[in-house]
Length: 346
Image (cartoon, rainbow, N blue to C red; front, top):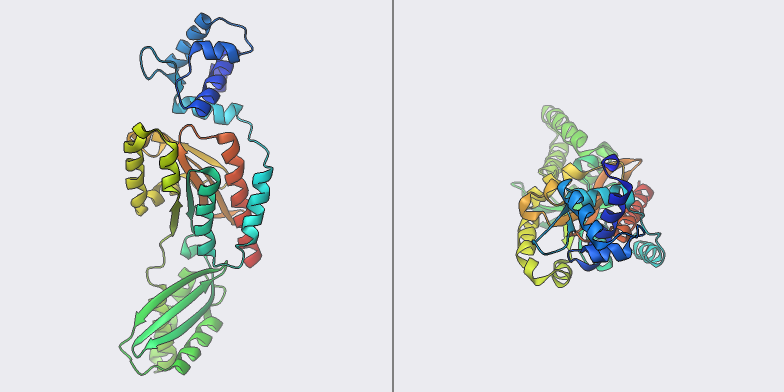
């Protein structure tokens, strides 16, 4: 991509991208001529801009308007020109924020992180929890709500907590029985992933049946019900009104389309599966993944995890004209802070 552009074209394209991000308006040849170090006339700039349009890096919204960058132009700029800003005051705020969240459950931290990202960027903040199947069993406790009804509290390594109400046919189970159940299960399954736990439960239930051991069988049945359906990922998205305040009123219809997309949680997870890049920051432009209906939106995302293994994603969603040089290092640093919190809990 870089090689097909002349030095003149690279400079002109960079000026147009930066001008568009700053103003969100089409950029004309006179503006480029003033900003450029090439000392070329507006007429010559128009010719260069026409060449860039023909190559697919720019487009002209109207016949008499200036040019705006296409996704290809933005991709070029982010990949070859952009120099992320060094974090200063933002870094201090991020560190201070995460220092006060460390005692919370990890799901709560992710929800707070999506809100914090939105507050910092004035755009949509997004955080996706790890898949439950990746996490290891740390502890389970049971609380008798009333006869025949038990609350299971499953704690996974990293501080993720899942609660589930379980209805039992057996109504004679006592709080003392539940303590025995949890002690047995924690000794048996601590440190195992949920797929390992599920396989172990099936095996142990057969053994308990053979030995007519009702205590262990009931404990395993409770654990089985607790682990049922625990494959979903939690997705937190915050900041809708912040984006509405920033976009052109004419773009409200596009905003409505985005919100409808975000409400389809399964569709969002499919998208995030595609952009899960263990190498770090990832930028997604418009129709690359959204399709033509959402071509004016972009995602800046970064994975967090343990030992180089990506477990979840955080990021921000906003218009194509986001301030990438500021937002990229912010999202990247927040992901590193989340990884550090997870590492310290294991």
